[in-house]
Amino acid sequence: MTFLPEPPHTHGKLPRSAVVLVNLGTPDAATRPAVRRYLKEFLSDPRVVEIPRAVWWCILNLIILPFRSGKSAAKYASIWTREGSPLKVYTQQQAQYLQGLLGERGHDVKVVMAMRYGSPSLPEVLGQLQADGCERIAVLPAYPQYSGTTTGSIYDAVFGHYARVRNVPELRFVKHYHDHEGYLGALEQSVLTHWDANGRPDKLVISFHGVPKRTLLLGDPYHCECLKTARLLAARLKLTPEQYVVTFQSRFGKAEWLQPYTAPTIQQLARDGVRRVDVLCPGFTSDCLETLEEISMEVRHDFEAAGGREFHYIPCLNVAPGWIAALADIAEQHLVGWPTLATPAQRALLKKEAESSREAALQRGAAA
Ligand SMILES: C=CC1=C(C)c2cc3[nH]c(cc4nc(cc5[nH]c(cc1n2)c(C)c5CCC(=O)O)C(CCC(=O)O)=C4C)c(C)c3C=C
Ligand SMILES: [Fe+2]
Ligand SMILES: [Fe+2]
Image 1 (cartoon, helix red, strand yellow):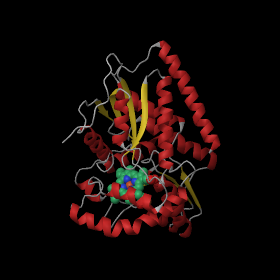
Image 2 (image 1 turned 120 degrees about the horizontal axis):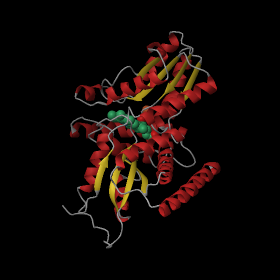
Image 3 (image 1 turned 45 degrees about the vertical axis):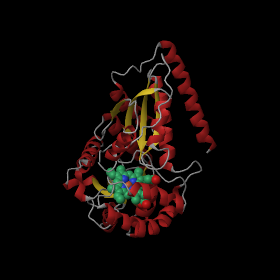
Image 4 (image 1 turned 180 degrees about the horizontal axis):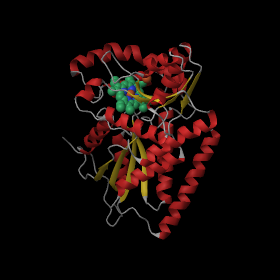
């Protein structure tokens, strides 16, 4: 075992703190080879698929990758933007706005984003932070609900990277924020804004990404955290149990996943005469393939084909100001005790930097 080379040490240089916002990852392009590369890395993770390795290697390489890559690439093409994959574009913007807001709150903290699969990879980003002199790192997964398949896997990748590093920084990990006031408040605000503009549905469908049911039986808290998010959000929206339903989407493979499944539930609602459904996906903090294609295209079509009249997809939190404020609150709660608070002169500089980064982001948005 050899360790990675250390960056040169400079005496007297002030160590900095950093927040790494980590999301799942996405292909580099909406093409068959790029999607195949991404799926191979993602689906080879033993946290994601818990089948004996030799058996899974055969299924993955001989069946899944040859058949799924092309189909998935076509789906990605339907949501791709000029700037790239929505998941990556939003995560990048969130990191930028978070850096700006933490700066406005007086913190001298570097905020960067990383992807668990694909690029920019965790080893790449963590290596760069070390080169930049960051000796305190807070890892902030983009998943409000903890699951071993997602958050647990990010932890693995961080530990795996530092297992190869001699001078390991001080580390903190956000585990979950499924019941965080700021997160719930941002969700509530996005639903109310949608309802103010469009009226209310007959049923609100709160759809989370599924996981195999086996993981729940083996102790993964994800299902419980999803139900808690939904219950707390419904209470804020003053919904009765008849006015909303919690479902699980994106089933993969033949095994049973968490139920009820989103698509069949929504089809049944249409058959039962429910005229309008609104769908919210609070487990995703950025819009992505699973929301923009699966929910807003496929499930919308299923609902309408089954006789439903009005289907509304309520977008993810993305860069909503309330969400960026919640991210800043969550980050601050994990920075406690670290010397991130700047002097008045540094604060003025941070404020100026935040303003120019906000302007640059707005100009990029206007140009896109
Ligand atoms: C095979 C098992 C899978 C598990 C378990 C799983 C859990 C899981 N995933 C997310 C969030 C996202 N998943 C996304 C895409 C996606 N997910 C799987 C499979 C599992 N996910 C696949 C094969 C794919 C790729 C697309 C496809 O071919 O269908 C995405 C979107 C990525 C994007 O590029 O836009 C997200 C986000 C969570 C939160 C989760 C468990 C809690
Ligand atoms: Fe997934
Ligand atoms: Fe999907």
